[in-house]
Amino acid sequence: MPRSYVREARKRVGPKKQRIAPIIARLKAAHPDATIALRFRSELELLVSVMLSAQTTDVNVNRVTATLFEKYRRPEDYLAVPVEELERDIYATGFYRQKTKAIRGTMQTLLEQFDGVVPRTVDELVRLPGVARKTANVVAAELGDPQGVVVDTHVRRLSQRLGLTRQEDPVKIERDLMKLVPREDWGVFPHLLIWHGRRVCIARRPLCEDCVLTDLCPSSRV
Ligand code: SF4
Image (tube, rainbow, N blue to C red; front, side, top):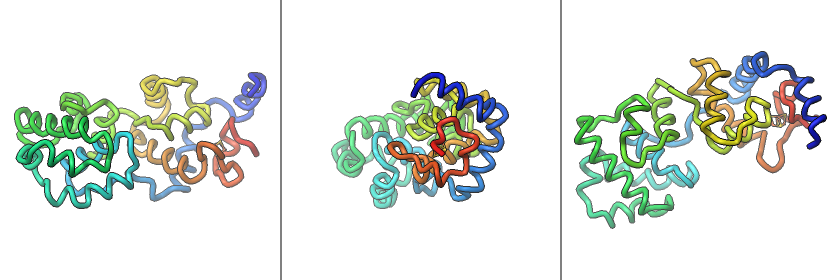
């Protein structure tokens, strides 16, 4: 897209600081069901689900955890079976060797340093082996205390299309969004973008004609 066109489009929609409130309000109205798609019944199940969701779909994780969580209920359970058995049980989520190693390391650390209880802060969560900042952010947000804005592929694409960031690197995108999005919306904001990205602002063919953000979006085609 030519630069002059992008400049024009940005001018047309106005500064992002003025657009962010109506963007959030309209997305909340359009996607009242926007929540995490992973299924879990406890903090431990949430943590394991998010760890398993790397490089695969939430649907796939839910399929695996439906039986996994019947068998593994406490941190000790993940350490009580041979490594190969846990690898087999999570095989269908892909990268099963790394994930098994990460889950077992995490369970060990949970028992040794956190009395078997999943911690709530990002700083503590990233001390668990195999728990990266993104995983920690998702878990902390779901536990009611978001300490950042989760940036996945949908959040990245939509933030760029909506002109909320010019960055490519997820860490820098998160920094931009944390400055822009009110803190009370840090938890819900990624879900709103994820659901909007799945239903309307699709990667290859955004359905601008069905979008509630056309007058607020510099990438709108209508
Ligand atoms: S107007 Fe188009 S490009 Fe912008 S958010 Fe909506 S669907 Fe995506």
